[in-house]
Length: 489
Image (cartoon, one colour):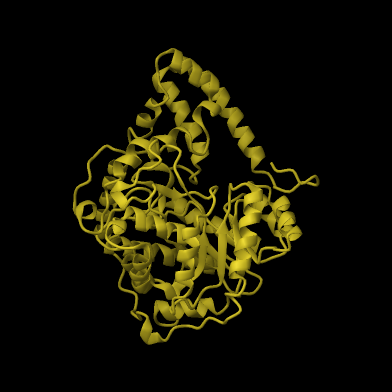
């Protein structure tokens, strides 16, 4: 590290980041961003900043022109939990691409989930958290350092300081695997690299719900204990988003396995339950929260009227939190260790084998076994709910409903006795390395054409026609987002 320890280097970088205040984490396309900003100005609650989700350079440039506030960036596709990342050309290319996006926005930070959607050749539609082990923490730290070095090299910000990489603690969706408690994992990452962190309050609730903690502690006690071990001094941004029962969950009252709590998961389109603001108040009162620069509602895909209503209430409740200067904790109150040596090739290969097991277990091809799946830091009581409900729904409906995407092909397959559900088994039939930047929608198009070719080759030409129409529509939808008549794409 240039200044000795990862902690000292983090504070050096943090000193160049202005306080952003209260803001919104938004998708470029949905809801219409220009209309949303106009509605917020009309209610006299313009956002202090926007954190923009990954989009095309042209769309990001349009946002930069339109927005009259600082911008941050929520990246996608940098699978930094994965042990093969540093040898992967796509990973290196993605780092360079995101540096260009950060330059367009002149963003102070890059936020990326400490999670993946692709492991051991298997692709998923939504994030899966890392396996929480010491070896995994070491690999995440090394991959994060590689990304930060890339931003230092390729970004050309106007103020001269490269954007800071922030890792976001991901949600749990039904299960967790590992040998370390989640806050201890992030403490190890922070000891080994100079990244900042994003703490999502809804994600924290899902850790309570799907880690088994709800069976042992009250929510308030859990949050206290979690924060005592989590590297809170590294938290630069916090998020608050909605929670909701997933569409695949048929038993809406399910919850006996986790303290009778509802089976909520992270859901940005859903209303924010009051319990998350109670948790946020608890976090904001913690004495080690000394690096906070931004607090945002995540609102991508949420109805505009609900965004405006929630953000107005949010600003009334938290308008004063950035008026009191935050202070850096004393060095003695945080762990100041030097970064250890790099992980060995064998350690990365062993972690790769762990992720291969992870993919097979998540897909239902193997039962959970081994220390990271059966030890006290693991929780698999709700794994079956993920494998039989959430995951099939994801492949068939999330990011594009299969029947809506390929109506003629699906009708013809059904006439031949081939159910849509068979596509899930085909999807996970064998590992498939990525050949381009991860995009679940385009991946679903490609895989479905292959499925048709496999099950009913006489329908391949029709499926390919529908696929080309989908790709053309997708390209049009990714054009710049603002038009003179304020209509969305």
